[in-house]
Length: 423
Image 1 (cartoon, one colour):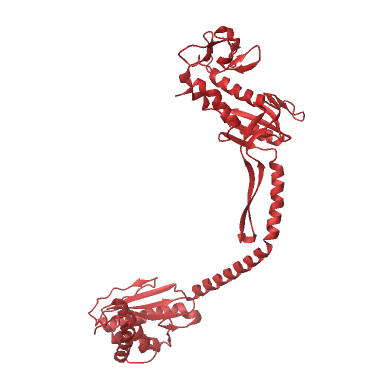
Image 2: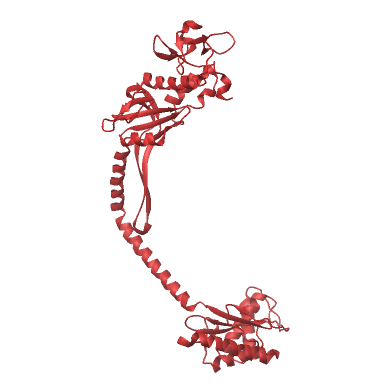
């Protein structure tokens, strides 16, 4: 139901001329004898006290007044506040999130500005104009002007229009608290429920009430500053420890990043050869040569021969050959890539190596050939391939002997768990 559905002749409250206050239709005589006028347009009202419809007021004659009901509710709200000298206030607090140096700790501090609940008001006046001598011509007329805890309070009853931000800001500068109470939806209620709904809205709940500003905010800000100083002093020792831990962690991370920058490959070439892949990599310090997967005796022998020809050193931890050429590392990488292609592609597959521009993670597809499998489990087979490679490259065993030793070791290590391999 919209407000317009009540009609322009259905008005919940009238302005009683003799007493100069808003009244309900039950407080006055019936008909024109009610001595009431419309608070919006000043037209005489009739009190409709029939036996069928809810008692209400209506304009005594035709009028273009379209806001009579809204204006009546608005003014009745102001009158109720002024006559009772109290209002139900919402809670208000000031809070601030503070941090230690480099945000090693964080904490939210707060202080109360206004406790919630029904509070008494002093010097309540309806629609009193506020003037500032220092600003001639600048005025503001709040719905209700009062004093709350010794501080000036402007109350605005929101029915159709909210308080303009400029006015609220101006009042804040002048040291006023500004409270806004929304009664916009009350006009949708049946006529006999409007007054009680207004009383609940004003004196029993703060669900429709909000602070636009509060005169005690400045004092609360000063209190926050004192709280912040106390918190910082209390957490100073903790902050010192946390800063030291952070700096240590950052130093460790920096060392790790520098290490990774040095050792991580920035260039690589992959050459698939049957069931294995020969990979040449380069970082800022060295060139590496490594065989991944199962490699035939010929591939292992060729790889080891190339590594030794170029002064490579086997790194058992990384399981690869390494070459250190200082400033010539990049050039040596290109040379080794070309040499490996010539040796592996040309020797084993009989094809002429194709010149390739060095690029990251390049792949040269080559035909595969059947290879013997020592273990059906791919995890065991991979462990076998790696162990056999170490035995051949690091320990100097011939390929066949390295395979036999690796097979025995892997088989023995898996016997406890019941895992078996097959030749």
